[in-house]
Length: 161
Ligand code: THU
Image 1 (cartoon, rainbow, N blue to C red):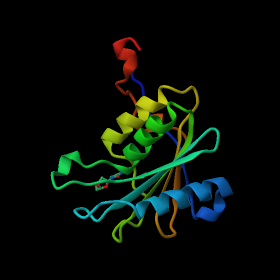
Image 2 (image 1 turned 60 degrees about the vertical axis):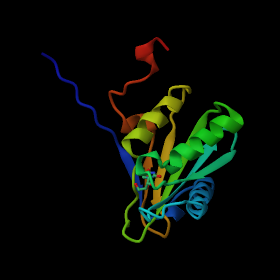
Image 3 (image 1 turned 120 degrees about the horizontal axis):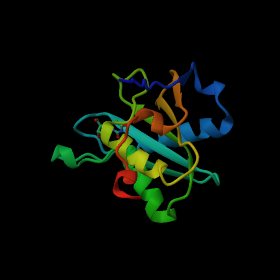
């Protein structure tokens, strides 16, 4: 019998000012995206901003529906928008910002979004970094690679891709 352990390190910045100006800009784009969220049911507004390797930024926000399960998360809206408009450009960093009065620490992507992020990650050789924050102040979490959030993932390699 052998065993394997999976763990990962992530970084916690006490404020945005500790980050590069490019990262602060990306967080601000994600915060601005929360203003376009349609979240009348959860009141949990989320904005995502994706920066590709060439410095382009694509944003998205969560879009809910009275039929709850068909609502879309912010990350997915931004990712699909990027894929549709620009194809599979390598992604450097995705900032995800939550605007909700009860959410004082950054929130992390749901399980379905992790699966979807991982799919796009598998197209590129390089890590896909995440920055997680709340809209006003607070800590920023930096995850070096979305792969870290979905260990032992099911992906296209099982289907011969
Ligand atoms: N949500 C996102 O858009 N992204 C996340 O990372 C977590 C959750 C949305 C889905 C739903 O509209 C609301 O937040 C509450 O779950």
